[in-house]
Amino acid sequence: MRNLNHLLPLIAVVFILSSCEKEEPEMALESPNSVVLKLNKDIEPLNDREALSRNELEEIAKSKFAREGVFQWSEVSDYVVWSAAIASDSIISVGYQPEGYSNIDQSIHEINVNQSEWRNVREALISYVLDTYQRLYPDQIWERSDVVAFGDKPLPYINLRVWDYEVLANLRNFSVVRYCEPMGFGMEGEIEASDRSDSGCGGNSAAPFVPANDFYTSPQGAMVSWNYIPMKIHQAWQQSKGENIKIGLIDTGMAPDQQKMGSGFATGFSSNRTIEKIGTHQTCTFFIFCSDDGPDDQCGHGTNMGGTIAAPFSSDGSPSGVAWKSSLVSVRASQDVLVNSSTEKDGVSDAFYELGSRADLKIISMSMGDLFSSGQVTDAVNYAYNQGKMILAAAGTSFEFTTFVGVIFPANLSSTLAITGIKTGSLNNMQKCSNCHSGSLVDFVVTMQDRNNASRTPLTLADVGNAPTYTGGSSVATATAAGIAALVWATDPSQSRANVMDRMKEASNFYPNRNGQFGWGLIDANAAVLN
Image 1 (tube, rainbow, N blue to C red):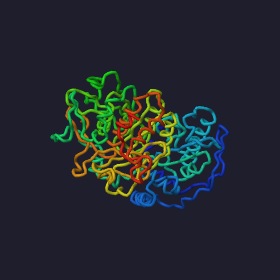
Image 2 (cartoon, rainbow, N blue to C red):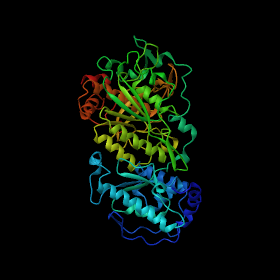
Image 3 (tube, rainbow, N blue to C red):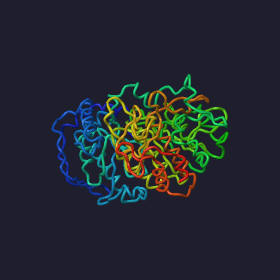
Image 4 (cartoon, one colour):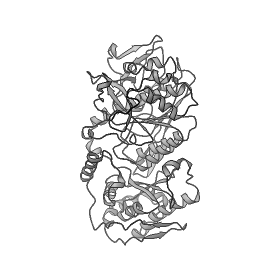
């Protein structure tokens, strides 16, 4: 690989070079392995245009959110995509397939990317980028490691460092390319630090005071959060505690000092189960030298969600999880709940592949997301779904500028169940929580906020100790619903995902109809385990 000192000045000047000395792209480029890269159409010339500013890109995005509720990179021009790429870290995600291949969403779990027909396409695309850079910037010696980010992947996508307009525009228009998207562009310019904290990151210490009506103490001594009662979770425990079910949690990791999610996970009444902690998120220097940053939670959000799903049922007064006999695999895939950087999208994709590949795991819960769709993450979600996993995802937690947005990505995919939170009160006059998203794509809701006291939200584990902390949003609603799914599945571990889904639907208050904002509605956990 070239010395980093050579690379940095190169990156500084390529933006100038990219608008001049370009040749018209050929309609077909033959690679060394005989794959012919065909353009679907002529690319639009750059014509010396400067890249759009971040403010201009964010205005385009907000306009699409307002009109359509979702942002798809495939629906904007090569110029917009190129501008977004260089406004972030210039890493793009390229989904590929052999010429004429179709229905990849349904067959992605059957694909072996090391077979020649797939490998040849991937290598042809990488060779195209290398050869073009060698032509444009002949003073440098270009190697594969200079353009491929995050290494080889087990699914049909690659991550490439692309800052040249011609290269990106051709990649977007090759017939073997399914998508070509910037990985690191997000709306972080609009998001204040306080919003990040409200959505899950920040202090995760124990609450200084917990009113007596925010919990009840079980006869065995475990603390039970107040919001379990409206969903009859405490009654469902008479039939099921989640035994013999393993749940995957894709989040920000697990606090290393929270003994209840470590050495104490299988203690008390929660014996004979396991917890695993892995990390798929990487930290990178200069977007080149990357390393796994481990399984530990540096945010607090993952610890909250893990505690909600499966904290042990103990006699010491610590808060109990919903499925307190289920096993858990915690994956640190992101730094925070906004999956809006290249390393986070890569981490989430790897997490879905890792959990989807495990035959011993049935449920995946992800209380994170983004306003922008991602083809790469969609591929990984579809892979896990096709392996029979039930995937629950948060419908969204609003920031001030996103209150008009409906269900966010990836909860808006057909392969996931979108979960949101509601306030207490009459189910005939259902109200979403103060910062929760709703919409036609929501599948289920969970009670997680008091109608008369917005700060009264569910109790769960803090980063350390037995004393509880509060958590909220569609995040905790998703984790709670994942726990309920485990209770239902545990009544017959051999049943299918469809069976579990039907039982949850039939036990929800709007069944047999769907509500336009809240899907099937509030799940009665006791009715679901008895169905």
